[in-house]
Amino acid sequence: EPEVTQTPSHQVTQMGQEVILRCVPISNHLYFYWYRQILGQKVEFLVSFYNNEISEKSEIFDDQFSVERPDGSNFTLKIRSTKLEDSAMYFCASSDTSGSYTGELFFGEGSRLTVL
Amino acid sequence: DQQVKQNSPSLSVQEGRISILNCDYTNSMFDYFLWYKKYPAEGPTFLISISSIKDKNEDGRFTVFLNKSAKHLSLHIVPSQPGDSAVYFCAASFGRGSTLGRLYFGRGTQLTVWP
Image 1 (spheres, rainbow over the protein chains, first blue to last red):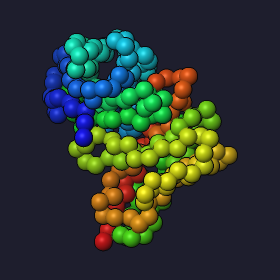
Image 2: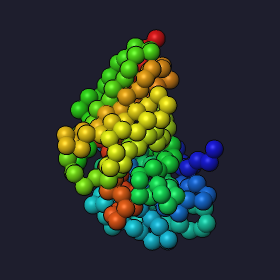
Image 3: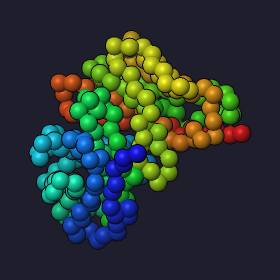
Image 4: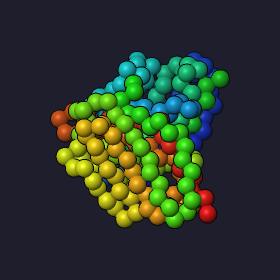
């Protein structure tokens, strides 16, 4: 069964450092997303991406965040200068056309980011 | 952001019995409601969904009920199995004409099914 894969599974970084989280969405999907879950809190939407541009971003997704699809398979989330409060599990997700409306997304296993 | 609420952080049920997980929402403009299941060290997995124009959707052991007037939905699992033990997230989306793939999640309910 096709799946969304994420790397790294866990990254520890110092405050102020740049971090790049990588995702390989399901190959025939066209819509890509990043969500995050701070420990003990809800899963929160960060950004959606379609046709090589951001469709929508939440208020969390400020200028420190960026996304990119550098080639035909990878989808990356960059945090330019990490803060302590960026510590969270980051989930990449993808969907096909119908899923983009109904919310039937396929999530990866997550990348845990710890900022010290 | 409290648009989707799951007020029970945990539920414990004996194997073979019914599990009922509840969810409330505040925004009447939501178009789709979904349940996701999450095991430790894995991402959320889609389980079942319901459109706002329906009041029930069934898939095997899983049934979701929607009460729009009460802004309430529930997930019934019958019969419950130990492998169902996981965190269950309620989620909602605005559907067509709005943000693509943006889900609003509840905090989740940890279901434990014991033998």
